[in-house]
Image (cartoon, rainbow, N blue to C red; front, top):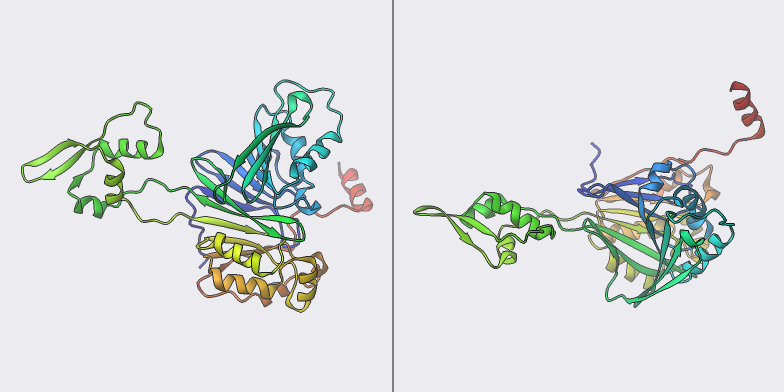
Length: 364
C-alpha cells in the first residue's frame, strides 16, 4: 500500500522525469500560490502554474537549473506584482544579463518586478528589476542573516545552506509553519471547556485578531462552568497544544560528496519528511561523480541511511544512462521505513523530427 504524503500546507509536484532538468513545484494551499525550486527546462509547465508563483529558489546558475528563467519571464512579465528570486552570490548579475538581452520598448507601469536575493553565509543582498523601467537593476540593500532562514510567510519557512559544486550551490529545506492544534485530552485534564475562546486563541496564535479581543476561557469547577480572563495566553496554549509534527521537504542537487557538504546536509535536513536528492551517477562511475562534484548511488544510499526521511525521491540522473536508467533503482538501498518515490525516464515532451512535424501539419 502506497503511503501518502503527510503535508498539511504543501502540495509538491515534481515536473521532471529522472533524466530531465529538475523542477520542483510546491503549491501552498492556504495562500493559493506556489514556489519553484530550480528553473531549467520549464516550457511544459502550464502558464497558470507559472503565474501562481510568488518566489523562485535557484540552486545555482548552470544552464540546466536556470535557463528556464526566460520562459518564466515571458509568462509573467505583464503581471502587476513583485516576484522574489533567491539564489547564490552572483545571481543578480546573471539575471541582469538575461534581462538586458531583450529590447523592452513597450514597457507599461503595471508590468511585474523581479526582486533578486543573493544568499551569502552571513547576509542577503537584494536587487530590484522593475518592469515599468525596462528591468534595469536597482540595488535595494543588504540584510543580515542570523540563521539558515532565507524566506518565510504565514504558511512555510525556507532554509538554505551553501554547498560546494566547484561553484556555490544552495540546498534547501522547506518546512510547514506550526499550526494551531489542540489536544482534547489535555484540554480535559486542564479542566477547560470548549467554547468561542478557542477561536479567539487561534486568531491570537495566527496573528489575525485585528480587534485585539481579550481572552476569557471556560473552566469546569465544582460549582459549574465559570468564565475567567487569562493574561498569559502562551502558557495556556502550551498546556493544551497538540503534538502533531510539522512536515518538511529537503532539496539537494549538484553538490560534491565531501565532509563539509555532508555536515551541512545533516544539520539542515535532520528530520526531513520528503527528501528530493540528485543521484547523477551509478556506483561504478563514482570517479566521474567526484571529478564533477556530483553524487553517485553509493553516496545517496549513505545519506538515506543516516537521514531516514519518510519519503525519498531520486532525480537528476545523468543523460549518459538514457538506455540503462532503471539500474539506478536496482542500486538504491532503501531502508524499510523509507518510501521510494519513482520517476519515469522523461516527463517533458520529446523534441519533434521534421517528418513528425509534417505529419501533425497534414492532420490539421
